[in-house]
Length: 101
Image 1: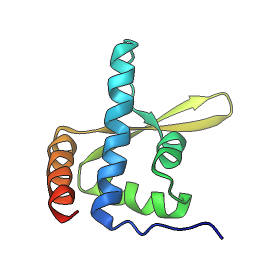
Image 2: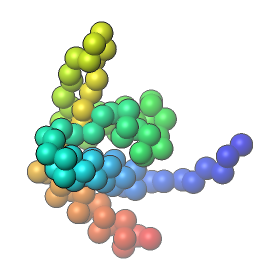
Image 3: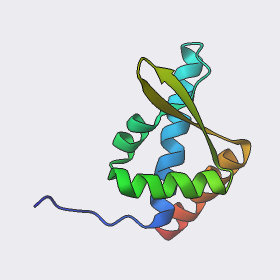
């Protein structure tokens, strides 16, 4: 069994928002105006799909993120983008997690 590291909800939320912001910075460098693919965000955050869905749903309800679906062949893919409130909250979570570390 792999060593599992416990992360509290604040660390996970910070990590999710950070993943979106990193992807946005990369997209801006490439002149793209999209968020991060949901599957890429889940992998970046090292979360199980079920756990990630719970956080994504909560963050969307809190208006920290928005979800955009696009057709890709026969599949539908989901992009996740951060809102202005999400950016503000990211800074807040970074500060809190730094103080609690």
